[in-house]
Amino acid sequence: MEPAAIDERGKHARWLERSALTASAAVAIISLLALLGWFLDLPLLRSVLPGHVSMKPNTAIGMLLAATALASCARPGRLPPWVSGWASLAVGLLGAATLSQHLFDIELGIDDLLLPDGLESAVGRQPARMSELTAIAFLLVGSIGLMACRRIGAWFAQVLALALLATGLFALSAYGFAMGAENLQLPFLPLGLNTAVCVFLLALGWLVSQPGGGLARVLASPGLGGELGRRTLGPALVAPVVVAFVAQLVVGRNWLTEGAAITGMAVASGLFVTGLVWWGADLLDRLERERAHSRQLQASVHTDDLTGVGNRRAFDEALAALLARRAKGGSPVCLLMLDLDNFKRYNDTHGHLAGDRALRLAGALLRAAIRPGDLAARYGGEEFAVLLPGIDQERALMVAERLCRDFRVADWPDAPVTISLGVAEAFAGESPESLVSRADAALYLAKAAGRDRAVAAQSPSA
Ligand SMILES: Nc1nc2c(ncn2[C@@H]2O[C@H](COP(=O)(O)OP(=O)(O)OP(=O)(O)O)[C@@H](O)[C@H]2O)c(=O)[nH]1
Image: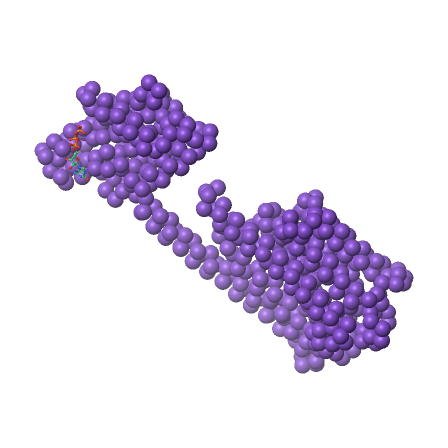
């Protein structure tokens, strides 16, 4: 992968990591406010909408632990490594214990835990038990935390995070019922709006907390898929909740019959999906055109107009990159410096325009002769340079002799043109200037020996 693409991936991965930390901070704040609401007897903080279900104190404690586990997993090293494990275990146990109370009709004494004296009545029922949905969410959060942080079953942890997301979405949309209906007929105990939001945030946080792999990998990708995912995932998650919430609200308040609400919900969902696909297609189309345009610009910045080969800037950048890699023990790099023979006389005899035609054909011959990964560039005037990574000087000399032959037999429009070449292989740690000057010295020797030939450079020790 190109360094720029790695940078882009790193940028998006950091954004995802920050999103996971933000989700964890939001959950911590919401649950701290709920706890404060209980101890100061402020219904607004406990339930967000006074008169509706509150976040229980033991739920708030569970949320705080879940937020801690998520934060320490998303940004390892900030907290001691055992924190995420123990916090996840505690949340998972709280969920499992509450769920077994629901399932087996037993009393483990965790429902009224932390409830200040006299405020039991605020819960509105006894025991003040957290909803089955919250208990399931805690069980999932605990399992995800235990698996994800130890990098065991990372894929399974992501599947559980999706199940957690479904729980959060269900809890949020079911809240429409709580707001609309006078007598709730839910198949589970209702849960507070703040609790439902926290479950949703925890699910999102866990899904994006490991951008290196799993479902979050594509979100960190610098490609078009990553761009599409980052822009459409939010609306795609929120819209169904809003649709279901509104449908339940209007049914609960008897504004519409259930049948009409279901039809409305189906139509709204269909319209939303159509809109999202349309928007996604338009986005991809626009991004692809922008990228093609910027690739074109990038190419034109690095191309010589007359000959179509790379320009001096392209050559300097490629040479520096190849020599840096060579210095770190990378594969060999050879340089051919190549000059059209007696070109001043050619121009003087056939005219400058004929000279330009010859230079154009020289560029075409070079482009046709090199392999992908090599670079031919116009070094200046009628001098060209060819970079050949991955081959030694002996093979580079053979390439140079082949080029000499190609030029000799080419169909020149005005008069034949020959070339002389200097060939040099870079030694580890050699500077660009030194390599160019050794190849130039060899080119000078080729000219001095009668032109139309290739000469290998002396090794620096010789
Ligand atoms: N037509 C044309 N000529 C160019 C261009 N760039 C450089 N030249 C000419 O290339 C010629 C280079 O001449 P010299 O450097 O004296 O070398 P030479 O005549 O090729 O002789 P040797 O290199 O010794 O074989 C000069 O006359 C330049 O004007 C160009 O873009 N178009």
